[in-house]
Image (cartoon, rainbow over all chains, first blue to last red; front, side, top):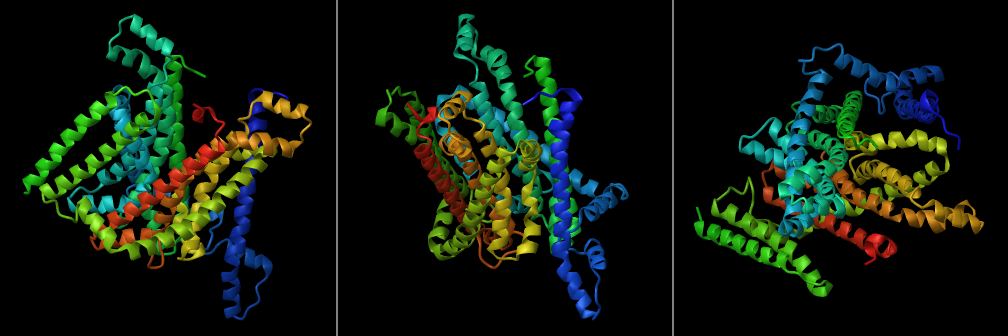
Length: 298
Length: 286
């Protein structure tokens, strides 16, 4: 295989293949939109005792109010209408709902990451905790915790904790796990040689931690933070489902499904995808900057 | 306030903490004794948690609407086995298993195709990586709309959720065999399929099992959450959301217990299977 470099490499190895696949998916999407929405139009035509021409049929399938599968341009139009054309304080603005989801995601992510790091530090430094806590941390993730998110929200509501915090707690529960596991691995990653070297310097435990263990765990931290931020967004969205669908992207999904507003569901879904992509990219960016400053560019 | 049971729980906690401390300090040379100790420590820890939970809920008279005590939950489990079984059958046996099998199988096949065609690998993998980070659970309302209220829509959600982790992991696994080993296959004049079946898929097994394990949890979550969006009057997600509404929190915990049991058992089963299939892997050779 020949090696390409610079812009040419970007074009042939990245833009062209990804673009082709995306274009193919869009075509597929349009195709399915026509296919899935056609029965309704045929039905309408049959009721009106009218013949419907193929071109008319195709046109109609792509502009229904409540299509089975909305066409991409309808979703794009809805997103444009609910972001750029609405005031961001409006309850119909996607930015308003998106911000509510993002804020609880970030709060939960911060709490989860802090808890994960704390647990990892404790586990690495205590044999008892390592042996007794670690198996339970792993078991805790085989429990479908998302399933009990509604209960957590309702119960916390009953004791007058409502709003941002319950959702953030679910995000935190989901995101602490990858961080804890990654950090345990990271804090244990220094070579035996390096640890021995620290010992010959007569370094104390905290010195070993700050000068050796912590720096070598940083790459692991960022890798697991990328997983954690994505999963805490999922937690925030699911956490918004049972709160009576007040606000947030999850609430948009739920009200959309109650009233059959497929376009609204899809636009909320796309918005969630964009938020996820942005959050992961941000963490990645921070990790690159930090790694560069630490001289650990791979 | 019922301070007797609270004090008992606290004493038990202290005793268990002390015992675990001693156990963890033991220097055992390996063998069955060390294995027993390694199993005993987390078990003791878990039992302590349950005793503390019982002590705190009963001791402080916490209303069962907030947090029922373990004994109450256990009573509820034993008294409503038939409901729990019906829910489990609807959600796990129908939706999760069907969706899990289809999602993992199609992800695996897609990975082999993607691996064969470099253009697809460059095009599809970045998208696969992106989708793996997306809140896929959001498609649940759409699937419920398309495939109806019964288990088919839940299986569809599970298929979509499990597809991408399988795809990404299998592609990574197919690249895991070393250049030396591939060269060896070449010197034996083996063709693409022989290399695939005899070298690359076995070498990819640790990655595939990793995806299978991730997916086993994801599948259960997907099916349960999808049931929040509409379901016939049976199913674990349905039971959780309605019993929360009726403030029967002990029933919710009973469902969680079943879900946790199912999740842990399938995870354990996969781990055993992995050990049997990838016996050659360095992490299992001692």
